[in-house]
Image 1 (cartoon, rainbow, N blue to C red):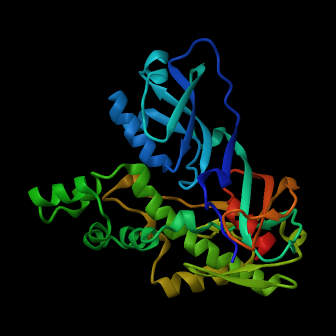
Image 2: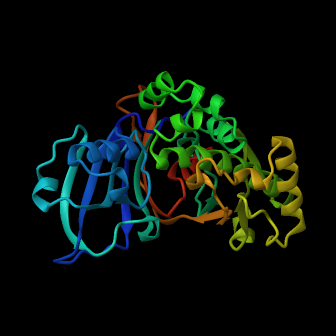
Length: 338
């Protein structure tokens, strides 16, 4: 079995941002380079260092933890000198300039990747121009899906019991039955990630079922949430979009086959669209959105196969490519190597 991220430097991610800095503005823009750190954890640590609310630090997307990554961030109410003077383990901040708006998800075009794949027995590799646009393991972690489903179904006590958070449990010591209050001690971005993980799991299932019905020369792969289906006829699906379910439902979906698949999954999950309205924590009420089921893989460069110095008798190869925002490089490697 191939190995990814045996070293953090084996997995390099560089954000392709639309942000353009200027000489003045109320926001400071900086490049965040991190190694072996989770994006949300770094943002929380920076908020403590700078003594600003976590929501005042903007970024366009989370990046892999076990990797060397670069991304553009913004911060409100902090000077250039304080940004340059910060000390944070596994993190380097580089001042870029100023701007009048925070960095948000819409400021991301995509990411460029440089990945070393290790422990290879063969030099066989599929050449891909596109790949099924599944969410990969980084989205799900160990309990994210389970926690997200508990939140959606308003099983707040069960959600809290699954979350290992000091502030959350400290709140319960003072107010033993206030599970909603305990959840509110967790940063909203992280709470939203739990709900997103549950949505993503159902989206993956929908796409797998659809490709199993419509695809040619399919092959399947196990992962933590079930099975992923890949197809050779990628070009037949470039324009197909699938809804990430939320409270808006699927009334706008014309394809009856997709509607049937989603309804079947919702029934199996014993969840309804209105369950995604979470009045107790309104910031977690998610409408849903459309996502293309195929991701274009661009600027592909495959290096020479070499002896793997970390795994005796095995080969390694360096692969470079670019993806649009929200797509997973690890899924490309799955499709290329299996």
